[in-house]
Amino acid sequence: MSNFRTRPLALLILALFALPAGAGQRDALHVYGGVAYGHDDNLLRVPEGQPGFDNHLSDSWWTREGGLIFDKTYSRQRISIIAKLSKTDFDYFKQLNYDGKDIQANWFWQLGNHLEGKIGSTYQQVLAPYTDFRSDERNLRTSRSQYAEAAWRFHAAWRVRAGFQRDKYEYELLSQRFNNRTEDASELELGYLARSGNTVGLVARKVKGKYPYGRPINGVLVGSDFDQDELKVRVKYQATGSTGFDALVGYTQRDQPSFGAGKTKGAAGKVRATYQPRGKMTYNAAVWRDFAPLESTLVSYTLNKGASVGAQWDATAKIKVNADAIYERRNYNARREFDGAGDLRDAIRTASLRATWTPRPTIQVSAGVAHQERSGSVVLGTGSFKSNSMTLSANAQF
Image (tube, rainbow, N blue to C red):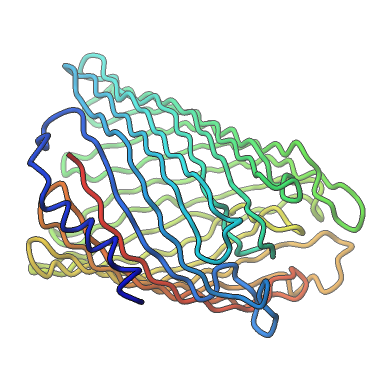
């Protein structure tokens, strides 16, 4: 990386140190600003053995962002608002340049000593990943969420909670608009809260997915609407002073009539464990099995099985180093007319290392590297690829 490329970031870091103290950590309103530089040697995830777009695989980019952060508690009511705008420019694939948006608004409310909840909304505009479709055209993904939940602690050890959330996704490219969807999720939970702080609850959840545009398969537009019912147990358990578990596991049934027999069911959920012995290290691990959407021209969802491990080293009071590794196998039950249906699966491996320096409570400087690779599926049209990337960033609140 040349001095020309690193100079703007170095100048920003020097400027951050020159800033006055400004707003304190307890002030409600903060101004946010930051800049980041990144490079990826396979930005558009081109499969191995295939030429890149314009015979080009790698690219670098700059991102500048700024915004406002508001967080204040009025008696028992807390209001939190985050509004950020960003601009990302690429060196080679300039047609991918885009303006990003990230807006979050939440009201954490409480009535009396037994009734509390949250009402909120989010809006985000980012560049959609190129993991599962091949293109060098810009494809912005806009996501909107509205949600509300309420929890009533009707007994010292018992609580009931209800919630609703609507997520809506829209894609810029007309060739990808079949991934546009709306998901409505309703949830009801009965929980037991032990005096030790451990909790266990029974969660019933229903998700309805609506796709307004059909998915073109072999010249036919196929609907992707689905209904998903879940019954799971949620557990938060602190086994010792240094070891804790967090789990949401149970049974899921998904009904998507346009795909094969339409019904898929079985165990699903996620289990996380954290180990924090005395000292400067914290370790974490997780395993999961669940459904996830897929931005592909052939299928709309996969049944994913994965595992992750990670560690954080608090090198000093101001420097933290994080290392993470993730493995996920994606499985799909094919429509009956597909040939080679037994090969509808692939796997993605990701490893990352990041160091973060916090010279002041409101200033962060970080650097990271990551490696990602996929073992592809010929039937799914997902070839094997490898990608190595690095990022440098600096941001501040004042």
